[in-house]
Picture 1 (tube, rainbow, N blue to C red):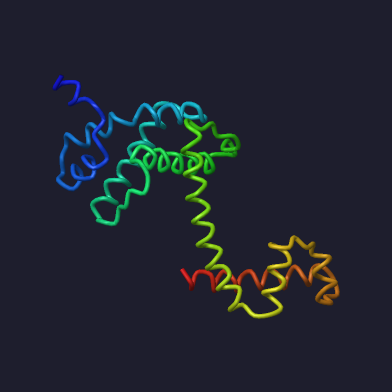
Picture 2 (cartoon, rainbow, N blue to C red):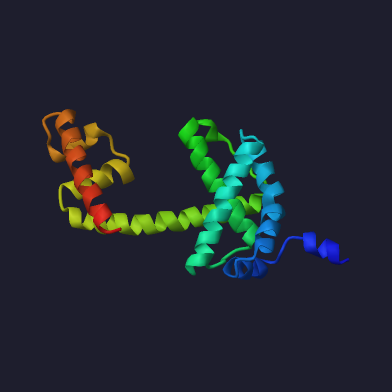
Length: 189
């Protein structure tokens, strides 16, 4: 009985305490515990076993560092957290390598939902910052950016609306506005 317990996946709390106490045993169990899930995901999405090992290693390091820094809050199951981190790392790698990332096969739909929620929250935070940067941008830049990116107006429409002589002038103005917006946006980070 004891042996089967030893090889089982540690509880989330055990993992966090184990990391804090530098327990090699906990880390070993953690490595074994969720690897199969990550391997399955990577194999389903244009990767091989070596990729899975690299991604998993990276995710464990991220988890380890976060716990050690003391700013780790487990808002979901550890399994979900590790899966989400691996998923994000792998998507990033796929995007860097090529456009393979078009259709990702998810291991379990529930993780996709959690990931979407997380992305949505990140987008919300970015949008609030963007609004603040836009407010500081002033006219006509604020309206040009909003018309083009939010209201999907064409450069021709914007050209006519603002009375530019041609679309090239409107494009130049939009470019200048974007540069200013970028500056403001990063000031608000």
